[in-house]
Length: 435
Image 1 (cartoon, rainbow, N blue to C red):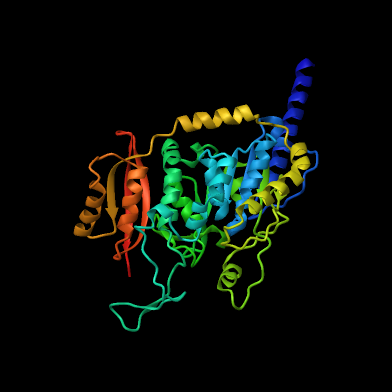
Image 2: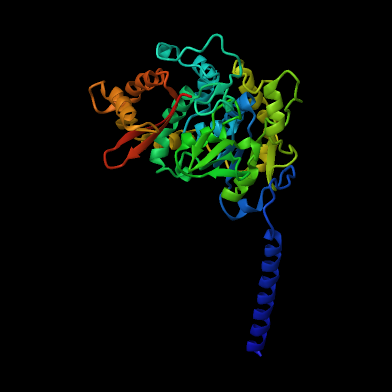
C-alpha cells in the first residue's frame, strides 16, 4: 500500500512538472520582436531578480548632439547607487556607451564633452596646437563640389561627407585602445559588457558589434550619412545604426537578458523636414524612429527634453542637464523597481581595479595600408624620424597630423593593435589617397 501511494505521488509530480514546462515553452516560442512591448513598472520586481542577482541594462538611443543627455542619465543613476551592468547604444548612444564601458566616470565624460576641443572635433576641426599641420580649407569651395574622374569625362561624384573625421577617428582610437586591449578585444570584458549597432546598407541589415576594435565599432555606429565618411569593417561599408535600429532594446534583451532595462531615448522629437535644410531632409528620410512607448517587457523609459540640433555641440551643459533632470524625475519609479544598490565605494573600487589592468599606450611599429610600396615607405619613415623606436601617444599625434597635411592624402583611419609578446601597441594606418 505504501508503494501504491508513492507511485501516485510520483505521477502527480511528473504531471505538474510537465504542465509547468509546457507553460514556459509557450511563453518563449516565436521570434523576438524588434521592440518588445513595455509596461511601466510600479512596485513589482522582475521574477528574474528572485532567482539571482538583479542585472540592469542601459539602452542609449541615437540622436546627434541631443544624445549627450545620456551622460546626465548615467550621472543620476550613479548618484542614486543604481547599478549599470550592461550597455547597448546606437550612434551618439554608442559613443556615450563606449565612454562608460571604458571606465570613464560621468564627471569625466561631462568634462570631455564640455571642452572646446570636443566641440571643435565634432565640427570636423582640429585641436589648436595642431593647426599648423592641418590642411587649410578652400575658401571658395561650395558645400557640394562636383569632381571629374580622370578616366571619364562623364563621371561625376558628390562628396560623401561634410566634415573630415581624421581628428575624431584619432580621438576614438586614443580613448579605446587600452580598454579593448585589456578586454582582449571582447566587449564582454570591458568595464561593463557593451554592444553597439551599425547599418549595412547593401544587405539592408543591422550589424551588431560584440568584439573587435572598439573605435571601429563606435565610428561605424555613429557614421551619420553625408556628415561623416563611412568606413569598411570586415568587408562591409557601414553607416549610422540609426538607419535600422535607433534604440537597440531588442539587442539588450537578446544579448544580455537583464532583469530590467532602463532606456534613454532622445530621438522621438525629430523635427519635420524643411525645404532649405538638407540635414533635416536626410534625417527624416533615413533615421528610424523607435516607438517611445516600447522598450522591453520589464523597462523604464527616460526621455530627456532638449532642443539641440543634430550637430549643435555648443550648449552641452544644458543638454547633459536635461538627461539628469529627466532621470531624477523618474527616480522614485526606478528606486521602487530595483532592489539592488551599488555603493560609491564599490563603484570606485571596481573602476580602480579596471584602470589598473589597462596597458600603457606605447607604440612600437607603424604600419601603413592602402598606398603603394614607395608611398608606404615614405610615410613610415616620417614616423621614424623622432629617433626613439617606442613612442607615446604624444609623440605619435603631431606626426599623424603632419602626414595628413600632405595634399595627396585623403583620409587616415587608425587602429591600435596590442602585442602581448612585447607589451606594446602597433599602429595600423589605413590611408586613402585624395581624389
